[in-house]
Image 1 (tube, helix red, strand yellow):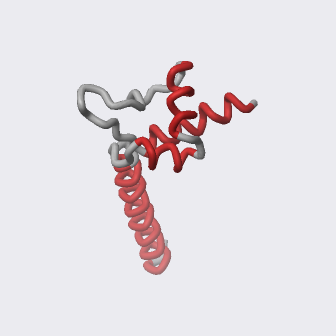
Image 2: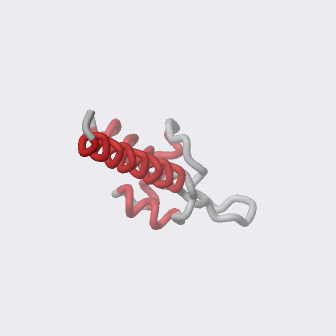
Image 3: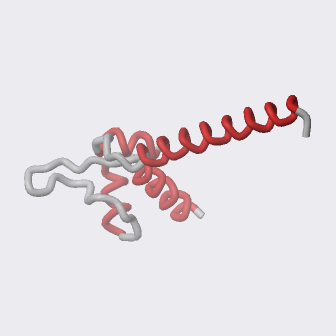
Amino acid sequence: MDAETKALLQGIQHEIAELKALFTIQFESAAEPIYNIKQAAALAGVSRNGLIKLWERGGLNIPEPRLKNGLRPMYSLKDINAIKLALKRKRV
């Protein structure tokens, strides 16, 4: 293998390592609960009341969308994706 090809391969390997690191950071941040119920419902494309009804019917593995013990629930991107998936299943 010549020096130019070797340098090109090393560059590609470096770019792959950077992309893996970026993906890992984004995946980990998707689990951080940073959205309140109003924001989560808006991002998922459902009303707040619709989200509560969807949660009451079951099948959603997200925090209860109500004030509980004086604390407001917070939602992550994973939770929002779970809501979107539940909405798709409901409409099918």
